[in-house]
Image (cartoon, rainbow, N blue to C red; front, top):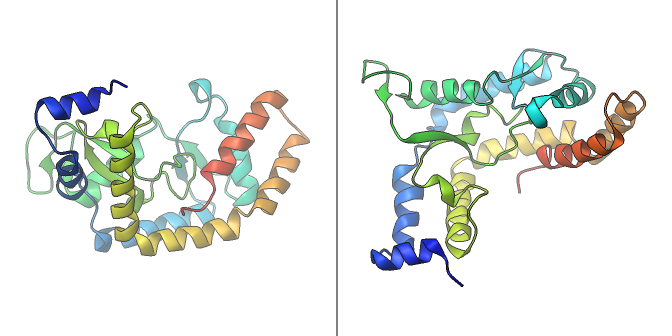
Amino acid sequence: MRDSYTRFFEHFNIEFKEIISFGVEMDTIYPDSDKIKTEWKDLIDSVTNDKQVYIRGYGRDAHATDLYKELYEILLGNGKIKKDSTNNAKPTQLLQKITGFSKTIKKDNAKSKKISNYQVTHIFGRTKNPFLFTAPWNLVWKSKIMDPFTGHESKGKNTDEYKTAFLKKSKDKYAEFIKEYNALASQYFSAEKIDNAFNQMESNLKVSITVFNKFKNDARNELKKIE
C-alpha cells in the first residue's frame, strides 16, 4: 500500500512520534481550565433556562436546522437556540477571549496576540449539541498543518495514532468538565427522552420520513455521552 504520509515522513527522516509530541503537547493551544469554568457554568445556565445559545447548522444549506431547534424545545424547554451565523463565529469569539489569541487583529495589542495559520477545532465534535458547540473545554487552536491528522479526510495508522494521543490529552485535561457534561446528557438526553421527543415530532412532520430518519441518527450521535 502507498501512503503519502508515510512516504513524506520517511523521505525527510521524521519519526511520527515526534509529530505527535509537537502537535499534541507543544503546538495545540488548549484553554486553561481555570479560565473556562465561568464560561462553562454560564453556558449550562443559558441552555437549561431558555436563554439564547448557538449550534452549527444541519443539513444541506442548513435548512434542516429547524429539526434540532424543535428537538431542543422539547428536551430542554429552550426555544431560543439559534444557528451560528458562520457555523464557527461564536466558538471563535469565545476561544479568542479565553486564550488571548486572535485571528482578526492586525498586530499584537495589550489584550491579545495575533495568531496565524491556526484554526478553531472542536475536540469532541458534537457541534449541533448546544452544550458542546460553545463549550470552552471543547475548543482549541490547532495549527492547520496538524489539522489533517484529526480530520475526516485522512485515514491510516498515523492518523489513528495522532487522534488517540490528542483525545487522551484532552480527556485528561478536561476530565471534570466531561464528567459534568455526561451528567447533563444523562439528565436531558436519555434514550427514552430522545425517543419520546422523536415520536412527538413525527406526529407533525414537515420533512420527508427519509430526512427525518437521517436526522434521528445524527441527533443520537450528537447527544450521546463522551466516553
